[in-house]
Image (cartoon, rainbow, N blue to C red):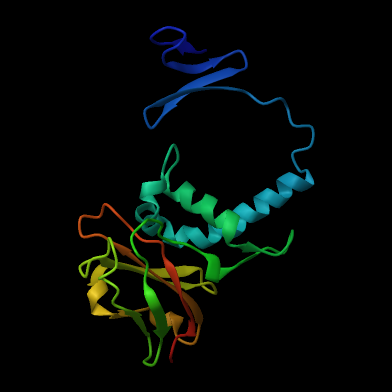
Length: 214
């Protein structure tokens, strides 16, 4: 049973007939229940489910990171869903059922700050990943104190090391440690920036693919 609150043009929760009402993030909504789907396994639905599965698997170990990285684009949706939507659109290659992630197109932070410049990554010591970039803090809106946001993603193990607030733009280099189990594995690396007050972010940049040194 559904109940009205504040009259027909105000809040409404529950179900009345085929109309469902509720509130999400303080936004009241009403929607019509869809008609029974005659074929829930249509080609289009299977295709979309496969894309969601591929991106969802990638984002799962990054879930807390992208909640920060996409927080300014969480408009009537969660930050995680904003990250999902972006990467579904730009970071999927292939055709059903053989979809793959285009790691160079992945974005893990999104915003208007100047992104990293001349970013690179290497692993010369066992279990260590070295990031480097050019200090571009003289660009408009950039600051030498912008904090780094780094990701090292291991697709073989579907695990990620995510580091926030341990380096600044002016450093130009940063070293992070990954688990011993990553040694010899191929990983994909990303760098973004966030302001010291955590209000603004940059788009992340793909820093490269490397094998972790043994």
